[in-house]
Length: 315
Image 1: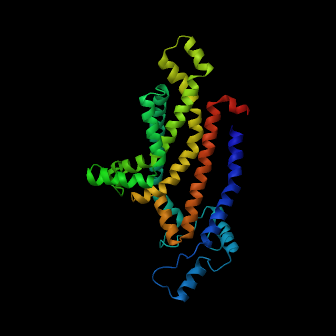
Image 2: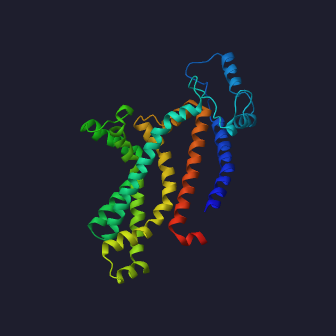
């Protein structure tokens, strides 16, 4: 298993370089630039700024400069993400470090909530198959899949924040640990994942309950609760484990919308603003961080699956 992890991480390096190159080219092909503002910049100042950041070079040389650096700059290979083009006296690493805690808390909290609630609802639906509880859970799952966070977020703000005044609708006060400020964003972000996990868990639990292993456990006279929670549930959790890696990556990328809607100071909001302002280095830094997270989370999901299912180790 360790050898597989090392091999996958080694293959991740060329993958990340390809992602960086593609994102770099696409960003530079987009119309406008970091110094194209509403207020016109004098041509000589604009040329000086472009020369400072290497934007006057051909795109191939710009990419090489970003990767290996030049005099005074280490380059991406040396861990230097470069200076921000719109935030004065700040480099990309500092900006990402400021927003990372908020994005991490939001993403992992939403994923944990989705796994707990989705698993519970899926088990209930499987144990009450074709009954009222089953239909209710499936109706909730369909609604969760069909309603995007961009729609659910403002609705939650309207009712819980404006009409009922139960929870804050935007911002984050870290002096209060931000718990009340994170309830609406976390639930909104987790809703689609809850829907998918509950449907996966229902189907997997039904299949597990019909397996020979569960028939054998029941034939031994084990209590039904023990059969369900100690024998059927671990088998049914395998598809959830496989889904958890891509789902967490989807949650992290979905935080772009949530952080913008709820005005949270995370990486996602910084990415949206950087894309609007054509802050090339900040966009590239965020793309690199999220790409690395997606690769790492998928690897963790695969290794966890192999640890839980001995059959996959010989595949």
